Amino acid sequence: MLERDGLSGFTHRAVAAEAGVGLASATYHFAGIDDLAVSAILEATDEFTRALCGRPDGASVSGYASALADELLRHRGRVVAGYELYLLAARRPALREAAIAWMQAGTETLLIGMDPVRRKALVAAVNAVCLEALLADSQPKACDIEELVRHVLR
Image (tube, rainbow, N blue to C red):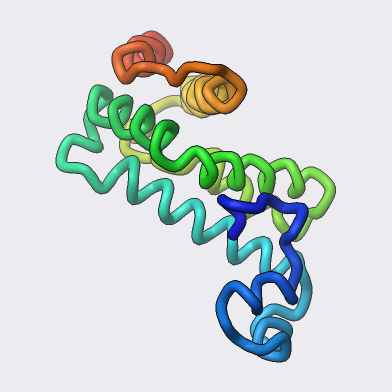
């Protein structure tokens, strides 16, 4: 639902209708809209991480770059939704922990043993690629993402 409609329609009522359950079910399991948003962020993060790391070559830089390029092409809505939720966390502290996890999604295997400054640089570079891709008319190629990641890792 978030991929398709974005945050503008993200309400208990809309989520209950999408799931085919009564409104009481949605409000019973999620006391507030922030709880529902945290759940959505965590689910999007899990899906994004699985897409980036679930490939046999996902732990390599080239595999990661290929998976990220594919994710940006095939699941643009999910990436947009993740960033919408991330920005919402700037105003809603309850969302921040989950939003930070979103920003680091899929980079864990590349970050092992890396110093804190380089870790931040890699996460920032990957997010810059994603945000540029969401605004551009053309998608980044895996080889361009790989070149950027390798540059940051040096």
